[in-house]
Length: 428
Image 1 (spheres, rainbow, N blue to C red):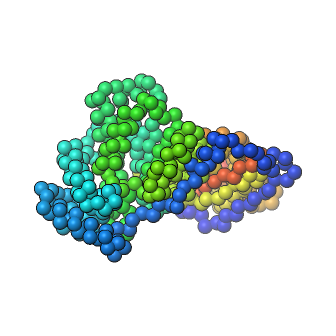
Image 2 (image 1 turned 135 degrees about the vertical axis):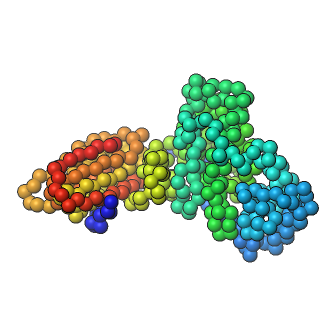
Image 3 (image 1 turned 180 degrees about the vertical axis):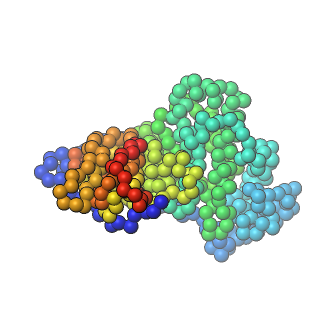
């Protein structure tokens, strides 16, 4: 496959004389104001670099004290995630600093947390859980799964518990304590897979990103499981999450967050990102490239793509309210096959694709006729093989909306030496 080197132009046609395109002043409701306040983050979380030279003198002292106490303990020869806690040098320092940070560099508390974590890992068998077959195939890629990386290289873990609104599914997974414990073991397995991708190195990637989808989540039914998961992760995986992104957040969650926010530490609040329904793609694109965002969240990444190596990069653009954007892919040769993916966050606009031959007198071919794309639709994937040279024009028409939307596309052209009849290959 050979990527086209043809120039691409994005033409923007502003809407004129369309009354709906002009925003009108409106009075915000109390709930709307609270949701917007909750969505605004504090200063963005700055992850520790774990360079010893960057530590305060008091923090360096605490690190050495923790090592000394660990030497004197029964856990002096222990390791965690394959790293000896004493003698593991830089990698060991990263792990020990996580426990210190979680307890505000109080050495005794940090040591107590570390020893309890080591005991739990031994009893739970955490070092080998990744290799176990736990039989949750129906939940993989749906409920909790690692998928791609953010813009800074952090592995991303997605969580979505909406499937458990189905009572039969809920009973099958959480019907009794034995089932609950098995699910918790599976959930730890997912997290351990993500941690295995970390560097445990100063200046490296030493934490993951958590994206939690609250859509249709049966909060009352999942209270017990949620509390167990939260307790396990807080006690045994300190400072492993660089950012927590909540998407499809219902209004009451935002209200509760705005009420409890004053009681959270600045460090904790700086890790939170809250996004209401309709803003999912816009929020995720700030932290994750479109080709790494799952298609169900307005991205271009399908689970099957992960088996084919690194994703092909996408180009990002914005569709403003009252505008139509044309993406022109020029220089397509006769017999070449162009394949493209395109998505607009929260669609709810008109999309079309046409092939414009270079030769005068040739007819433009409607590859995909104009149609309204509904908000929940996933990325469009399609291909076309022309019998004459020309350009492909992908159009997204947002002229009936006042809202700006994020979007992305990518394409690849496979050249052919043989001339073939025009063909269409639809795979939306």
